[in-house]
Amino acid sequence: MNIEQIREYCLAKAGVTESLPFNDTALVFKVMNKMFAVLDLSENSRGITLKCDPERAIELRDQHPEVTPAWHFNKQHWNGINLHGSIGDDLLKAWIDHSYERVVSSLKKADREELKKIRG
Image 1: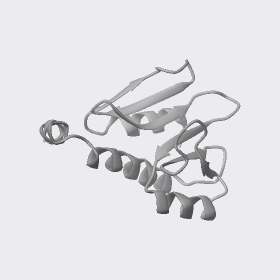
Image 2 (image 1 turned 90 degrees about the vertical axis):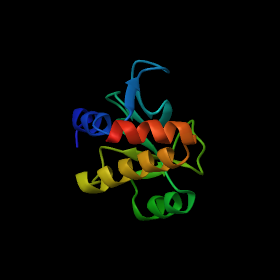
Image 3 (image 1 turned 30 degrees about the horizontal axis):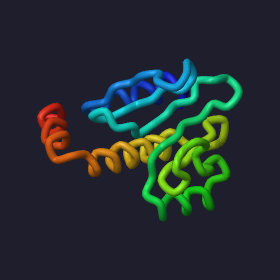
């Protein structure tokens, strides 16, 4: 997936917004104002940072050289994925979905109820 496809995939999810709160190359995706992905738009280090179950995060790092502990994030819960590697589209989408659902499950009850209304 290229960065525009990743952006469109993230934005197609219910309750998602995008912003550039850190700098002009770190595109942040939030669901109900909680971050679930950061897409690096810079040419040199193109990648995405995703939230992950801690045990699964370690497994993914062991199985895929493109997956590393996320820089500037809690390394127990966040993985960085190098998009220059050989990660397939379906696998990347599954990881994005996992990150999104992980954040949704941690939302306050009121935010989860609001999200249900948005989802329809």
